[in-house]
Image (cartoon, rainbow, N blue to C red; front, side, top):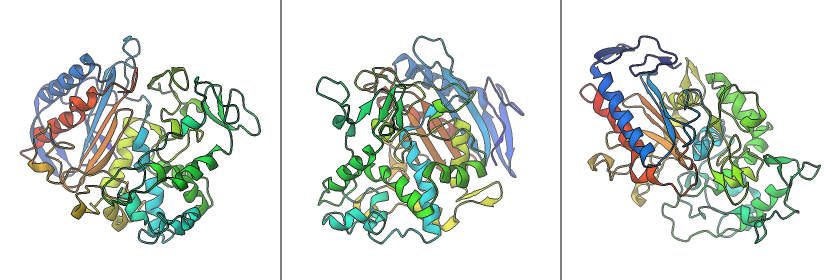
Length: 434
């Protein structure tokens, strides 16, 4: 269970705050001496302020846990550049591709542990249409999860739903709900109930590269929810809530927050000029997930920093949380291990990993911070989110922002290397003791 001992400023749930001083922190029997809390805060504040100045994002928050204890959780800036709504520690964020490792992946790990999924048999064993596809019938789940299968990176399904003038094709999108248009994608946007079948057909027919090298693809994450439902007999969203979020107390992790009565504010994403023609807030930003009604395996999850920290802490402890083994330890270790290093592929199974040889690189060339251990893992999200867990150093790092506001062309988050720079501050602060 995550505890809290903050050494930053503006401490919402503070216990034992250590402000503006060099402090000894004793956690689970291990003491980290002379952490200059004020220096750490000023460095983080400087990096974030510079990001806001260069419009990398209007606001952000950072959470760091050490030895299952939150030692830093700060909010910076505003929801938008009008400087009206401050970022709060309990704000809900669109997690984008962080969904991949916090939605379908724990379910896949559980099913592997139960013997209901096998990493090394053809994926067509579980997704029958691929049995008829010569280029796909022998691809394994291991290759897919490590992005080693040669699958097409992305398909823009939205193109099938819009006319050249940008208007909806009525056979796919409507402005009101009906029996044939039950899936809500946004305020007054409803998707044909069976549009998912069209998406599946397009994925089935997509091309596969003959060059089996690292090639990131999110296509199968659109298929995983159906496979999880078919194998368990439980709807995908219900399955992950009951088996993972509820046991760890992650109450805000979930889909479609606009349909729930959360007291939390929801951070907006993009001023959409193509599809929704308004500010996207409380509805998934990713168009593919949107066309599935907001519940998907590639994107769609929303949550707070603290709830994200809980699930990353569970991974850091190799499936254990609050004394309960939620996922098999050996399975989590397998999924968080680099699978194809001989092909210069840094990926684990679903999880992102640091660059091979990352510790030899300068900050500007590394991913993430060069100080992370080779055992560490995480994932990033298109909307400006990032999560990372380091079992060797017992560190969990959460960075949340809405870098796609007001539009996705804002790439300063990457160009300024903000997430890795912040992560490095904590490793440097703890360096003599790690």
